[in-house]
Length: 368
Ligand code: NAD
Image (cartoon, rainbow, N blue to C red):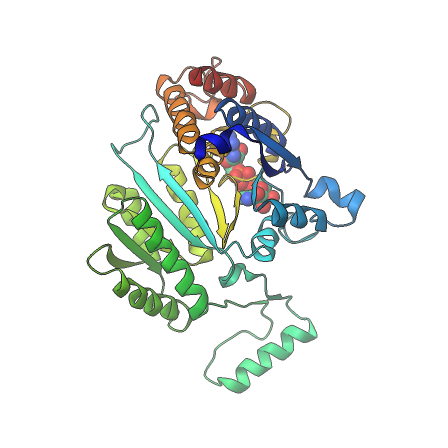
């Protein structure tokens, strides 16, 4: 079945993104094709470059393409700070209800690290929390009215008179589906333990609900997958001291965002940390890193994170043979440490570092 599917072309939406996005996307397209899976790429544009032409950084045609093809891969997209449009990345996840963000953090041989083995899977909730984008600018009538409503409802609340407000929605249904996703991911990948990460000691209503729900869902998996919880600050310390003690982590959106960069640091940096955003029957694959604008067009960025996101996409599509081939080739290039980008060299100024496209060439060669 998989063999026959490999013969026909898969239609996949490609969003190259901006900054280093188009370069790492091209490297990924080439590697996926070299893995033996024939793809009919439907390339659509989102981000600042299309904003001027289409009047929006996320044209409907992009959403339509992903909805139609059910599988997409995207390069990073810049989010202007404090002004301009809201994050296209966050909008895509919300519009398509890609509620689970899956970020495997695996230490490949050849990567410098004080640890011998790291093989974590981080599961981040993607649609709720402070990331939901429900914010009120300080001093606006809306914000003032929210502040006075809060004071009316909770006279003990202590607040300055002029705050900006961000809302942190965390629901039982949202928590339940992400925790269940984490346990199912653990089962599918032969893992032993799920750790829920929270700050329920302080945020008793929101994180408290997340934790209570996690404990309830954990009961369904008792005897198959172990469960524990950690307060997020303690989790950060534990991860930099004893990452080998952890297996699958499940976190609300904001902690997931922060802890996944921490985990990326443990396995060699953002240049090699892949990711996937998954909903019901729909998935969008993207690296953990952003658009690194300072390296735009320089053929300098490490393509590995996006290539490994492509490997995750192949697994999602049931193309395990091609995924194994691609992952082994990436691992071989990392282990040899010769044809790698500057960020993977001991000395970042090392003149033997290769560019984005040359690293992709080495991975393609290793597949042959
Ligand atoms: P970033 O990930 O772009 O860069 C952080 C650091 O890591 C920089 O030093 C950068 O040069 C380095 N880096 C990142 N990717 C690399 C790679 N492939 N190879 C080598 N080095 C790499 O994060 P940032 O600077 O905080 O964000 C830049 C822009 O990207 C912002 O507008 C942000 O909103 C956006 N962003 C987008 C996504 C996404 O598209 N999913 C994710 C994160 C950030």
